[in-house]
Amino acid sequence: MYEQIKETTKFLRDIGIVKPELGIVLGTGLGGIVKMIEIEKKIAYHDIPNFPVSTVTGHSGTFIYGTLEGKSVVAMQGRFHYYEGWEMQEVTFPIRIMKFLGIDKILVSNASGGVNPAFEVGDIMVITDHINMMPEHPLRGENEERFGPRFVDMHEPYSWKMIELMRAIARETDIKIQEGVYLALQGPTFETPAEYRMVKLMGADAVGMSTVPEVIVAKHMGMECFGLSVITDLGIEGKIEEVSHEAVQEAAKASEEKISTLVKEFVSRL
Ligand code: HPA
Image (cartoon, rainbow, N blue to C red; front, side):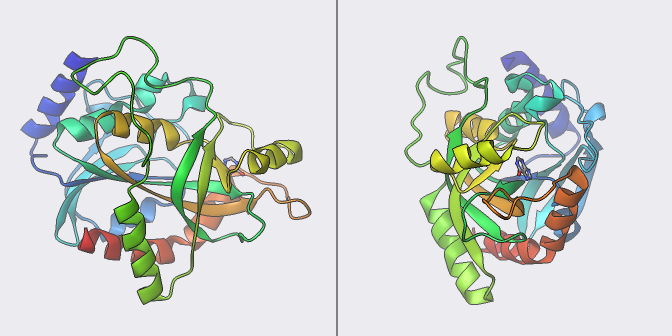
């Protein structure tokens, strides 16, 4: 995999992606953040050597390079999910690429189901920690020392400094944020009422099908991570309703303006 990563990184450097400072992973329905980026390069995943190609609706699969609030960024419009059939190494491949392009900080976003009774649909949750309940681990197997250590410290999976920065921004912009623990399940089914209850009992505030593998791999390579989750539906006793991918996309879209403001401020102050 090391050689593939070198090859892909070289390809991206050669087309002009030279000095990005921040990597952004755009989750379901959050692609609108791209509108704030002054785009310099835009390349479809299927045109990037060794890149997996995303298929789910709402994930258009484009790698973007440009400027956001004066910072040079790389954004993934569309990510790879384990439930699509990708191996964990494929799911997390773009994160390794980001690191090899010179990025040390990533901002990941997703849509999730809220299990904290204080949450409402449309809330934005700052991810303070996560619980990995995916059936596979992206670091299983022989460790590649050129990426990072065998045993990875996870005492600060999401940067405290970045969480603190977002708290300040939320106060100043008067945008309500929630904070909580994100638990990752493989999907693609949404949770049964009993599973939502389990998620809550395990100590999480929200549940989704992504993000955790990417953050694990980012931590493996010593990157600083920040995560935002839009609560698009509720897995709370008495409030559980039918949920669909379309409803999730729609709910995420409704929070787009709020999240865009937060992200814009956040990036400008990084
Ligand atoms: N569960 C899992 N993934 C999700 C959910 C959910 O309720 N909402 C959005 N993504």
